[in-house]
Length: 416
Image (tube, rainbow, N blue to C red; front, side):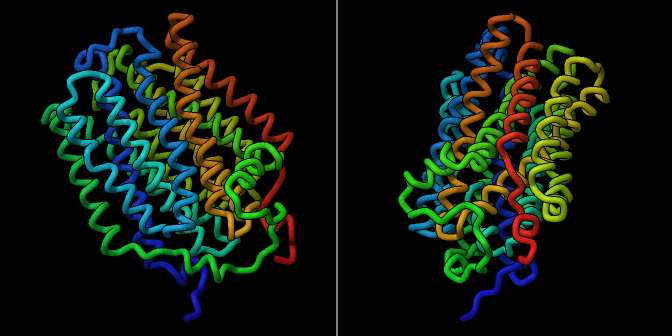
């Protein structure tokens, strides 16, 4: 049976995958608002122990980055649906650990499991949609994917903040997490199809990067350092995760010290996630029209500017504006970095290439959390973490502008 590519031809399955990534984002949102603000009161983390506070994000980043590599390779052997199902199974213990954790070490364990889940599940929602899409739709498809995921993350951060006030922190995390993970598992088993058959009938398009042999090490080397265009994208992906690590680890603590209540913290951080999520519906399509390179570079610079504004402005509205600006910068670059990698990879090794890119990108959680933790620890000023991240974004944007190139087939091969 002939398999058709494109958003409209596969609307039903893409819709199911969007629901999946919404739920994956909601699972990530379990840890975004409530846990960091309760680190001192509930888990005994000393007030200025920035490195210990960031340890759970370091664990998440390292595990998720490795799982991205594994997921990409497994998806080409086992199929996308099986890997997605495995991701949901790995998430089942997370709410239980959060509910009964006796110490901060158990929170690190829960976040490690979260890294396994996110590396397997989010990777597959993205890869499966790319299998089904046309080359000229990649920006739009990835924009929709990341819109759903980060909207889910933002909504979960706000909902769990209110739930913690109404029910208690642990009870809210247990109830929300169990419901979301259980629903994701059921829907994956019943509604998600494996999209590997669409790869074998992939639309023939020019591949900018030369086709390489399939062995994993060859693709890893190509994405990581051999091809400067792919390497520029990988380093940009790594550094942009410094921002998300900052939002995860430092924003709740910083805002709590400014006197904000937990629901208000949830709204400020939620603004970052909602703007990031919603704007990607448009920024993904934008890159299909004007190319990937400019939105990626602009996004890095705008995102870094929003980070610096957080320590300059005051009040809920000012902090929400700064967080929203960073969210908009992330929306410009986040789906379009992945789309650029997909442009440069052949269908036969696209899953592995995206896995390698996501390995470097999500390793940025760990490196970023260590870097911002060290900056704050050595200076004993929480604001130093913001300066470290903003400067890192500026340097990375310069590297991307210099070494990166336009990758969209419409601009590199106008006849496509």
